[in-house]
Image 1 (cartoon, helix red, strand yellow):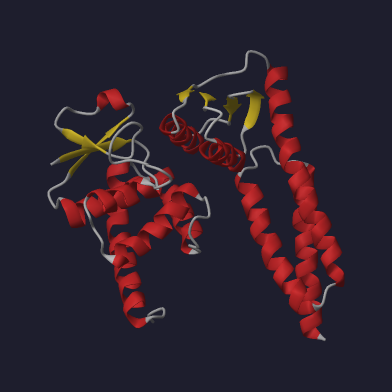
Image 2: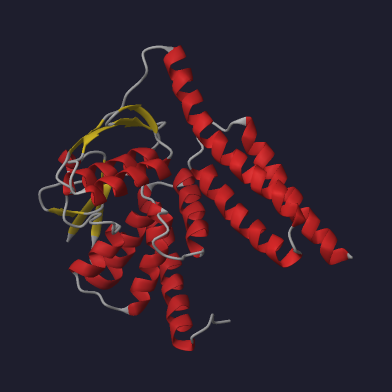
Length: 151
Length: 143
C-alpha cells in the first residue's frame, strides 16, 4: 500500500506518477492511497513510485497492510477486476469488429491486440470472465487469417 | 569491495552485479539484505530506496551505474535497454528481448538463492554482451 501526496504544481511529474500507478494496476482506496496485492515485485514497484513522489517534492510511505474483514478484501478485488474487465471488453469488441477488415490490415490489428492483451494481463491480479472472452475473440481473429492463407 | 543490495534479486540487481564484477570491481563481494538498516557500514548499497546507485528520474539502477561510472560502451547501453524494459516495463524503449529475460530471471529466482542466481546469470549476461556487440558491429543479428 502506498500513501502519497504530490504537489499540485508542476503537473507533469504528478501526471507521470499517476500514469505509472495506473499501469501497475493499483486499486485506489482514497485520494492519495493506493494498493496492490503483496508480492516482492509489487512491493518493489510501489517503493520506486514512492521515490519518484519524493523526487517530485511530495511525501510517500509504503505499508504492508491487511484488510480487517474478508468482505472488504473481496470488494477491493472486485473493484480491481472490474477495472481490467472493461479493458478486456474493449479488446474483445475491437477483435470482433476487425473480422471484416482486409487481411493485411487484420494482421496488423491482430498484432496490436495481442500486445494490448499482454499489457492488460500484466496488471490483472484477479482475472475476470471478460479475460477469456477477449482472448477467445483475439484467437478467433487469428483463425480467420489462417483461413485466408489456406484459400 | 563490499556491495549490498536487497534480497530476492531480479533482472536489475542481477545485471548490476554482473556489471560491477566485470567493469567496476572484479573482486566484488555481495551482501543481500532485507532492509536498508542491515547494510554493513563498509558496503556500497545499490538498487535500494534512498541510495545513490538506484533508480533515478525514470532510469533503472543499471542505467544509473552506467552514468555514475561513465561507462559509455554502446553495447552496455544496448543491454540497458533490455534491463530497463524487463524491470520497469514502461515502454521507454523497444526491447522485445525483455519479456524473455524477465520470465527467465523470475523463474530462476524461484528455484535458487541469490548467490546462485548471480553465479548463473553472470555467463548469461556475458553471452548477451557478446551477442549485442557482434550485432552492433555487423549492423544485423549475428548467426
